[in-house]
Length: 553
Image 1 (tube, rainbow, N blue to C red):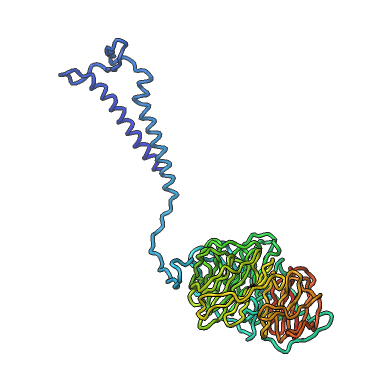
Image 2: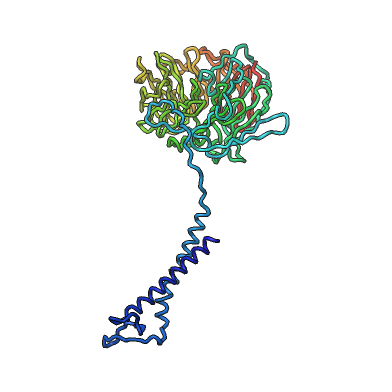
């Protein structure tokens, strides 16, 4: 307030000076030569005959004259006071903070492209819920944009969980081929099927499980809270150990979840339906980093949401976002891009997943994108080859199958059929080996399994289980026994085939013919499409809303 009073006094003083100045000027204008003072106050105004009118000192001034002499300065004073008050109000609200030197930036990992995308933590707050014997304790992981938050900065190095030696660490198992190394498994069971050890209610979807040690990881969807929810449960008991969630507003479109996490004992990585890549500590679910593929890479989410399952190799999470980069390797501890593969053709993300293929001295990541198939050098992210000869008309879902000797088997649904390609000796190009029509074999969702020189898969749309040779010819089919769009996995020389309605069948994996060893209804819901997992003599399977753990040993 004292500032306002001082300002008002100053402006009033200015007004007095201005008024005195105007009066003084009038008097000076009327001083004849040789006189010190003017006897008259002169108003110089023109009459009709253009003569001057002289008014004496005693005459009164009119209102217009006083408005000119005093009104204009008064208006200026008022304007000045208002401006001063506004300026002082603004000055009060300005907060002055010390300007400190910025902390040193971390050194970015080398990339094969000029500009790697920055890692980010979540744009919104995520919640970690840890289950204990007492009421659940909830901790909040606050996220911010900018450089990724490393676990070291958050409080120390990440320790690895104990492993059983026979884990199922991601999509299609330890070798990403749908085969478990389990032996001495049951070869038959009664009409009620294998013993159910536990069951778990889930949000509607088709997300399968990853298993490491005694922990099961599932990227679920909480429809009530409108959140993606990574849950960790005990393989032994099914009891929830912790969960980690973040906002994701979607509507049901043939399910709300559909990807399988990847876990290496220290970290677990997920890809959500709208393109959120999240890395958490495998032990307690604390968020290490997140990436929004849509915002950072311009990813176009496929029609039925993201269905790609992450891959973990060499301390990196491998993701194919499409958009600005065909493929990216995110460093697990920091979230920074170890390398990024270019996308010169502008191909988009599909529902399919990356398949690693060893050929010669190179390891190649093979991915069916929207406009064709691409092979990326696993060491540095360079594009080794691509071909536009393979596309799927509607939804590209089945992952490529590594046949060996540089051969890759590709299949799809919706009249796409199947094709075999082969890499050259340097893995820098591919050629077509054969192509078969949809009437021979096609698959809407599940990729076939290669076992002892033959391919086993469920043919769409009629749901027959078939055995094929490596030339794509049908060796046998299940005939009237149908399985719909359900998943299948292989262990101990047997196929575990789950129908879409929850009927589990045990089938001999042999080219000699279709031999069904056992069959039972194990799920009562619908759309049992999620990939299964088999580890420690336990089979994990689910329908749209329920996961069960079955003892198959």
